[in-house]
Image 1 (cartoon, chains in turn purple, brown):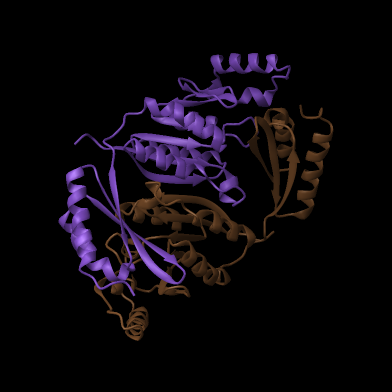
Image 2 (tube, rainbow over the protein chains, first blue to last red):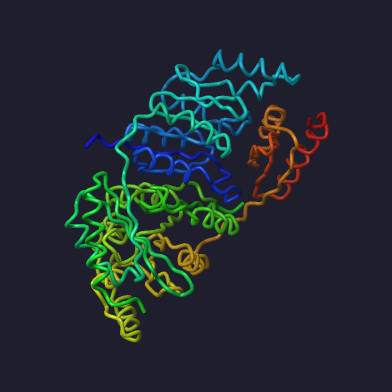
Length: 246
Length: 246
């Protein structure tokens, strides 16, 4: 069994907390990390306030293998992620020469002014590496174990595609789903016994409610195929022994 | 100006962090709180682990006026929210007599066994009040400023409808949206100046990317209609002075 690789995410933005924008990045990151065997353990959504961003980054970057952030790296006054990350690491936030030159050239080619606002997108904590942005050029960055990416989903996803090959992958968590036609109240007791008897699995029970009826999706997770199969078999045997769902 | 009422949310569940379930409750709570003038300031998504749940609840309940949780109040072994909240408050978690009697009667009426698993749904921190659940009966609960609700969206929404009338409402945050045909790089500088000149507004800039073009949604928020109108007017004047978007 290889070591467990963990991750956390900080979503930065008043627009998520106000309800105006519905986040689409949490689910995407969760899916991608699950696919490569990294455990997403915590997500925080924080406002565009430096103290809150710094506190979240410093709480999470020491606790998990990787930290990913989305949002707040554009050119406007409310884009304070680069400054906040620099502050969290205790380093200056300055124009990155490579990013500055790249953006300057791009705007020149397009006949557009390289405004003070646009220059903001070249600012990074000193010592950060670029995360390439194939959609709109202005890069994200990595410093230490913290990966700072855009909030616009198309850009976030493209940046994340560039980050994934740089991550250590864990042993992929295998999962098996068992459809249970009963509500949780019927199977909660025996399911708890099966969980106790299979400590190297994680058995999740996800209640569903549709058209006035409850059913349950049971998901067994394990890094061992053998343990997964054993627990799944015990659940199926347990379900087979129950009365049909009313 | 009335006082500011703040809130935070803890979403409890491995199924969100694994990507298997995409959260629908954060956006709903954000919308409802915005409508009644309560500022949602932070959200944390935590796994089904007691220490993590307790830490999140204790960090947030002292910092904000209200705390709302979703998930982990069903009958199975991975439903540990009631125990975790009790631990956070330093009180025992016991069968609530009213909830127990209500559930016992309901299962008896339906000719169903009141299993140990189902009995778990009557457990609450001692001293908690019920949050009625019109969908599936088993109540949520409130203790102190913490409101503990179900994770299934239909049940969460119904419980929240019962909670809203009990909350102190703030002065509703007014908002006005200005469509900006330019990317953030064009307007970032002057927009920052307008923000500085209008300190009792919050001006948000939300970049949009569609079909290879950037545009920006500008949102002015204020609790004062007068301040809102002034800042909105300044933004519109700024935009009118720009070249048409290419």
